[in-house]
Amino acid sequence: MAQKRSGTGPTVVLVGRPNVGKSTLFNRITGSRRAIVTPVAGTTRDTIAQPAEWQGTPFSLVDTGGMFGASGDPLHELVIEHGRRAIASADVVVFVVDGREGLVSADEEIAAALRGVKASVVMAVNKTDDRRARGRALEFYRLGFEPVIEMAAEHGDGVGDLLDEIVHRFPTGRRDGHQSAPEPETAIAIVGRPNVGKSSLLNRLLRAERSIVSDLPGTTRDTVDAILKWHKRTFRILDTAGIRRPGRVARSGQVESISVIVARRAIEKADVAVLVIDSVEGATDQDAAIAGEADKTGCGVIIAANKWDLMKERGADFVKEFDGKLRRQLKFLDYAPLLHLSALTGERTPRLLETIDKVAEARNRRIPTSELNRFVQAVTAVHPPASPGRREVRILYAAQTAVAPPTFVFFTNVATSFHFSYERFLVNRLRESFGLAGTPIRLHVRRREK
Image 1 (spheres, one colour):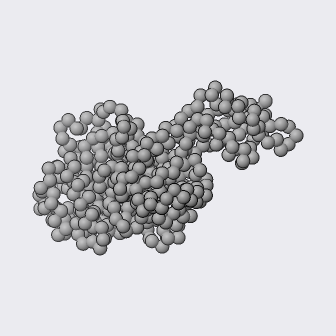
Image 2 (cartoon, one colour):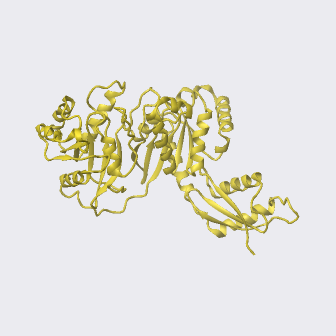
Image 3 (cartoon, one colour):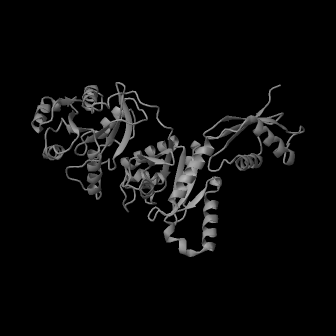
């Protein structure tokens, strides 16, 4: 449907009572699966935003939680507050209703609230492909919003007509698709187990209540992103749903299972993953599993020991013991910087941004071939690779074949692989020599063809 695009533009906000199809429409327009879609009313809690484009006009589409109607969600009031903030910033509001069920009192409640907003309101009657919805769209004209667009978000019927009407409502001067090239962005995924403080950390970094923060584990279901401008850098920060053990995910039902998939997609798209550890509880096997996901995808990794304000009085010996134990538990992340911080007090959160910037830069660093081969000569002169066979193994030269993460190919006279200990030695020396902290390094060995 609408093409994704980075950049700025008008803001379009989807509102409606729970389970009318806002998230399905969001995914249809953005061509993504950012919004979680299930038959469970109230699945969407956070407001999530995604760039979109229609007929050359870019805009930002925002999906809100179900703001009206009965809800047993203990966070319903927070959902309403976030929805109100999104509406206040909108250029166009799309009021989504359910054509199958027809006009209900909750729709009238929303209509009354929208009559006072500054944004232009477009009425979208969803699910009109169902025979039960035939003729019921007329009921919604009494709410006073015209025209009334009939559509079916699941199949795409009528969505183009809706987008035409949305773009037509954009303020004059904001419909031009010609914009300056978007600034480069560093994508940051905040990952970790439920309730370790990921959303609190995002809010501290943004100095705003961008994500819902609660003591209830699993509060964040969708992956929420926000733009942070810092020292002429642009960071897109992704606050992901907490990733639990697979067995617990299966028992918790469909919503959390999909949340884990969305969180892993965020890791795959990230330049840097910040693994948030609860300092009080320490690292767990699940923390190691999450870190393994990040390492496997090749994104940079930073370990953030959160809630350090509760630990700082324990002395230097405790810090040394804590760090040592954490490094042993996450030994395959020995390259990842470790920071002690507090999302609650803000202690050392500026240091986190500095470290993210350094790791992102290292992940994209390209080493000149001449420097790389001087490195090879110096390293192999002191510590040549082992020669398991009759012929001596010699590294003839090396080349960097990719960045993000840095990937190197070592050409030899005989070997097509190194012993794992020698490969580890080379990776460590590369990291030290060229400042590749925080990023995985990929290393391949090939025998030079004669």
